[in-house]
Amino acid sequence: MAKTVVITGISGTLGSALGKTYQQRGARVVGVTRQTDFQGEGYDELLVSPQQTQEDAAKLFSYDPDVAILNAGQIESAVGEQGLPLLELVESMNRINYTWPAIVALEAAKLKRDRPLDVVAIGSIADGSPSCFGPVYHSGKIALHYYWSGVGPIVYYASDKMIRLRLYRPGVIAGPLAWAPVNRLNEKAYQIRANRVNGAPAGEQVAEKIAQWIETSPQWVGTYDEPLSFKLFKYLFALFPNQFYRLQLLGWPKGSKFVGSPKP
Image (cartoon, rainbow, N blue to C red):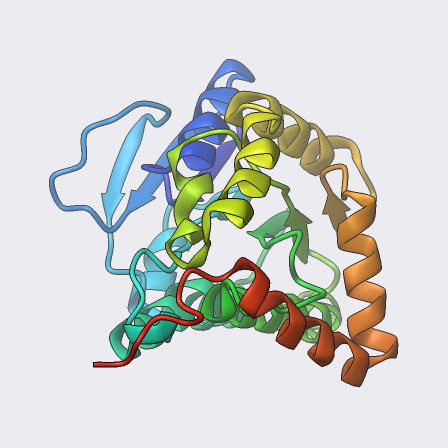
């Protein structure tokens, strides 16, 4: 019998690529989106959902999936004066990046399963080190990683080893969304970002690797080719937090287009 795969964020670059990848593998794909007028590819059935409540989470599992991929996410598409986060974005980004996956995880734990279920959260390769250039996004993703690692063992044993909360940390993916943080960058920092994005793999390549990992790997946490620079930042943040904070203080005036601009 064909597997059923539920994928949130089906309208995004990675979500659509994941849907197409699983369709090619013969799975029935239920795509989930918050967009009421969305028409796209990569799904056999579309679920429009605000992705906020327990009822929304329960609806995902009403499809009796074998795999649920929580890929929906939000980025800082706008910032305020001096590059400050916007209050309404802080609330909505934390809800979709962290609170919603947490609700889904606890709703999954209520299920009575006679076959395995993988609930895979798509995190961020930046989980280990916050950044002054994307503070709201990074903080939400760090919370997601910490929650998943902490609650995962509880859900696993509460479900008699039938439900696994697994985490995958993709890197930069080529595409327009990869350019989102440029709203805080000056020209020099923008070029550094451009070099990284232009050399990033396509969504289809990342999706294939994620699907292969879900299907064949025994790992609980997967990572797509983490750059050495990210590893260094992660270890610096974990081991020497004061030095990491000082590095952020040094980096902001060097890479920000807001430093030195007059306040109104």
